[in-house]
Image (cartoon, rainbow, N blue to C red; front, side, top):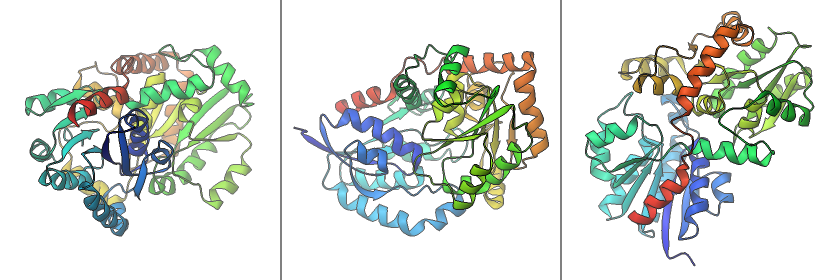
Length: 386
C-alpha cells in the first residue's frame, strides 16, 4: 500500500501528459492527487481540478475564473499531502510553491519555467520556494547550478512517449526512422501517395482556432494526387464541426487521435506550431518548418519581455545554447505567408542538400535526449525528497 500522499499540478496538455508518465512510477509509493486531465486520471491520479489550456496573456485572462478555483482547491489540499510536484505552468505553480513552503511542505519542480528567455527574476523565487528542480533541456542544468539551486537534468519525457507509441506499433526505434519503417506504417494506415506531410496546428484550443485556416490554405497549395497530409489531434482537443466538414472534403487528409510520433514517423517533412512538437520531430529527425502565431498584442508584449534568445523553436534554442554550429530550422513568426512556406516545404522535400543538412542538424540535437528516461529519473528524486 502507498505510504505517502503527493499533490501533482499541471496546467495544460503537455504538462498533464508528463504528469501521467510520472504518476505511473509514483503510484507504487504514493497516493496521488492533482490538477490535470484525462491522462493523469487514467494513471490513477485523483483529480481535484482540470487543466485550463491557458497560454499567453489574453488566454489566461479568459480562464481566470477556473484558474482561481484551481488555486483555492490546491491550497486546501496542501495540508493533506506530504509534498508537491509542480509541472511547468509557472504563474500558477510558483504561487502554490510559496504556499506549500509556508506549510513546511517539500516542493519538486518538474519542467523549468523559461527563465533563459524571460522573467529571469523567477530564479530568486525558485531558490526560495523549491527544494529540487528537474529540468528537461540540457542547458538548463548549468543555469540552476550557477544559482546554487539543487537541480538534475532528467532528459525529456517525449523520449519515453516516442518509444511507447512506436513500440506499440511494432516499430523499433533505433535513433532514426528508416524508409522501411515509413513504408510499414503507411501501409497500415492505407496511405498510398508518394509523399506524406504532417501538419501540427497546436495543442491548445486557441492555437487550433488561429492556425487551422492557414493549414487548409497550405494543403490547397499541393497536388492532391501526390501528397497526403496527416494531422495528429493533440490530447484534450476537439476540432470544430466546420473543420470536420473541411477534412471530409479532402480525401488526402488523415486525422490521427493523439498519435503524433506515428504521424511524424510516416512523414517526409512537417509543418509544426512552435512548442514541444518540434522536439518530437527532432527526435525522429524529420525535417520541419516551424510556425508561430499568437494574439497580436501578446506578441508585441512578448517581444518586449523576451531577452537573450534569437529563436523560438526548441531545436533551434537548444542549438543556440549548446553552440551547435550555424544551421537552424526555418521559422515563420506571426506573419504566415502560405506561398513562402510552401516554397520552403518544397526545398525540404526536393532539394537533397538542404534536406540532408536539416537532418544532420536534427541528429545533433536528438543526441542530448537518447537513452534518458525522465519519469524514472524524477521518480528517484521524489523518493529521495518526500
